Image 1 (spheres, rainbow, N blue to C red):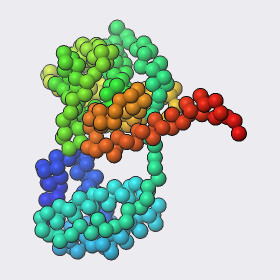
Image 2: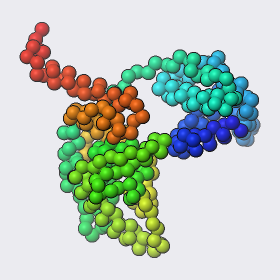
Image 3: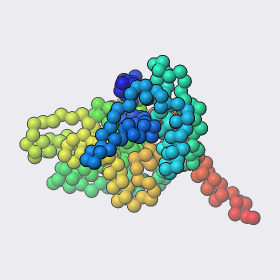
Length: 327
């Protein structure tokens, strides 16, 4: 089946994560449900069954007119233009793959007019607004290793995201072997399994060292309390029960910590990444250096931070210019 071959291509050749593979295949499935609604959703009085689309039906569906109709259908159903464009990108990748495999002669998505997206400036925290939280003492309990571990882990998650600009998935997949405190670097496996090294500042290295000490004690205590065989996990961050963390866990920690810190704004891992990049730019780092640290594939993704810096410059200009407030 061509769709299964496409999934293997994404996993093996493009080295996409399972989450990304799912996003691409779900986009293809959603499109095919639009083209063949009666085939993919056959309802009876008791159950709903699906019939697979044949390879020939898949190829027949990938044409300019049907794809343009799909875009209109999505927009008519108030789907966000950004979401529609993401779906089109997934379909374009599928079509490009089928062209390479000589199942299609051209990629019809390339001729589709993309819906215009509103420009969105990344939200971010200023250095001053988050500094008080990062520098505040951590509430620990020497009699409760689990509570101490959780407090150190949660603070380190925020500090790491803000001090290195890691993506949520990159922080989730960190292993003990990715951390080199002697060289003060973190090896990160980013999108498409691309590897990069990010330097860590002295204060972060100290916090990581403290965390690793408590992590070992927490893991040993957790195994003793549950009377289980030692479970060796290389995951850098552990859940409250000693298992490797997962994406939603990072979300919950970030939201909880930043809410308790009374920080205004969007409380997500990506906001911390934006805050890191914006701070670097404001402090004089060049775009190419920021691009490398963030793991962007092109400067276009990095340039969005120049908008934030320009907005800051305008505010400074209005405040400092001797004639700014004069008519």
